[in-house]
Image (tube, rainbow over the protein chains, first blue to last red):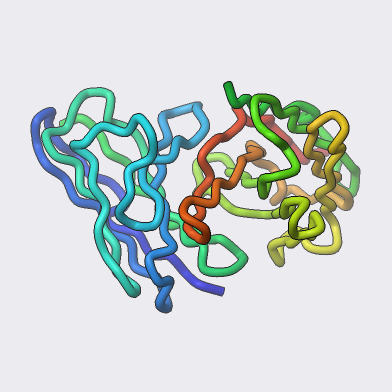
Length: 107
Length: 124
């Protein structure tokens, strides 16, 4: 099974700052990677698919990058509504494992 | 408007069974892969089951943690996805989500719509 290692596990940041979350796959997943945002008590929402493509309605301050085994989600100029947890997930064969999550908190 | 609504969660004793439902609307159910994902309290999301689309004969796959105990199925006439959970264990306690998988550009997948989740607690 492909393991997804996400870092950092948590991050305390201020509104307006820029953050980068990384996700490392245990083998090449050929950009078959999605990023999700999850607010407390809510279901996940898709942000990015195929490593670099923003889902419909996602603000342009979000961007995804990477290839092979290393991927990143960058959020420019954090807004208050961006706080929550973020997960990566690969789609290079089942099981479609998720990363451990990154909890973004207000400083 | 795409909607996914789960139901059927609750409290069940170890060894017991439960069937979850995911009622869908707003899209052609048979065209899409559908998945079950769960999240134990305070833990990461875990993919547990897949139901492929009609073009792929509605084939199914399971994670090792539920294979042989859980069964995913569809009622295509009512656009409902099911998860039959048998031989439940304490470690199956979680919020269970159904999700639709979109195939972007023929091969780029992602779960683009999720239900609100239904809570399953396995405890005596």
